[in-house]
Image (cartoon, rainbow, N blue to C red; front, side):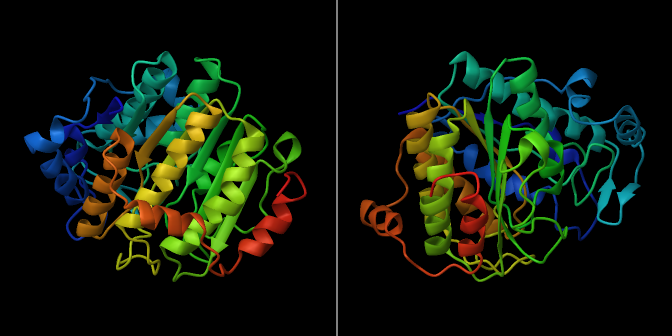
Length: 347
C-alpha cells in the first residue's frame, strides 16, 4: 500500500457557475460521497492545506488578473468570459484549489507522501496568465509546477494533460522553457482551438511541447498506444524530477462535451503506467489534479479507478494491462505527432 494523499474540501462545492452549467458542484459531490465511505476513506491520507498566497498566484498570473478574480468575491454572479462565471465563494475556492495542488507538490518533494490526487474545483488548465477562460479561474497545475521549480528547486517537471480539451493556459505558461515538458492529448479541432501538432515550443522550449490532436472516437487502446509509443520514451529521455497530470475525465465514453470512448480501465491503465514510469525516473513523484469531466458516473468511476491504482489496490486486471501494453491500434494523428517529436527525441 502506498501513502496516497487526497486533497478535498467542501469549499470546492461552493463554487457555483449557475443553474444548468456543466461544471457543477455535483462533479465533486459524487466523488466525495464515495470517499466518505469508511471502507474507501481508510485507504487514503487527507492532509490539511490552505489557499495559495498572492505570491504563489503571481508565479503564473498577472496582478490585474488576480485582482479581477478577487473582485468577484461576495458577488452573486460575475462573468470572466462567456463560459466562465463565478459565485460569492468562487475566488476563495479558486485560491484553495491552487493551494491544494501546491501543497500536494510540497508533500511529494518532501517525501511525506508517495503520490497525490487533488480533487478540486474550479479546474485550471485553460486559465491564462492574464485572464480566466473555459471554466478556469487560476491555472492550478501551472502554479504548482512553477512553485516546484522556483521554491522547491526542482530542475524539470513533466505535465501530462489527458483532458478532452487542450490546456492552452498551461502550454502558454511554459512554451519557451525547457524546464517544463508539456504533453497533451485532446480532441481537435475543438475548444479552445489550440493544440495543433505543430505547436511544439519556442526558443529554449522548442521540442518541449508535444501535442497529440485527436479527431474523437479514441478509446482505451488508442490512449494506451499514445502513452506507450510516444509519452514513455520521451519521458525516459527527459528525466523529470516530478510528473504532474491534468486529469480530465471528459474523455470518458458518453461525456456530454466530447466523443472519446475511454473507460475506467483506460484511466486505470494510464495511471499504472505512470506509476511505473515515476518509479523509474523521478522517485515515484506523481501528482494528479482534477480538470474536466461532465458525465457524473464516468467521472466518479474514473476517479475511483485512478485512486485504486495510486494506493496499490489494483483496479485493472493483469490480462487487460498486458493487452493494453501491446496496443497496436491505429490512432489518427499519432504518426504526425511522432514525426514532429522525432526532431528532438529518439523514438
